[in-house]
Length: 147
Ligand SMILES: [Zn+2]
Image (cartoon, rainbow, N blue to C red; front, side, top):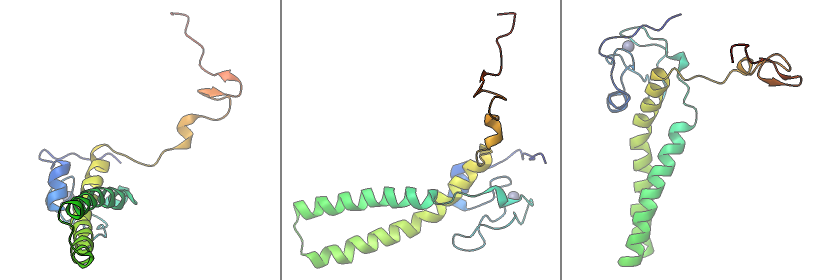
């Protein structure tokens, strides 16, 4: 089935900020906090292609972790506050930072999957043994006589 393209498709950044459909930019992308809708309620785009897996969680934890821990380390060295100060600032910053950015990052990755038509790798593209590429019997494609 060919994918129709709309004239005013949103950019992946717009999809991330508005959590909208990557094709029409109007329908909702999520039916829960992080649960993707089955299809767009405006244009009917089947969202079953969207499977960012652990990607959003990895990027969010890494990014927020680096920023918050760098800030924590700088404050610990410069001001040397008591340990309770870190407990009431660092943990909430990590939790709120991750929860606040997880949904936009997931929407962004889904939009990138849609734009670049990303899908799971197919083993068939590599060819069987001796049938294509570099199999057990060597090169399957001989150089043409025009070379
Ligand atoms: Zn749509």
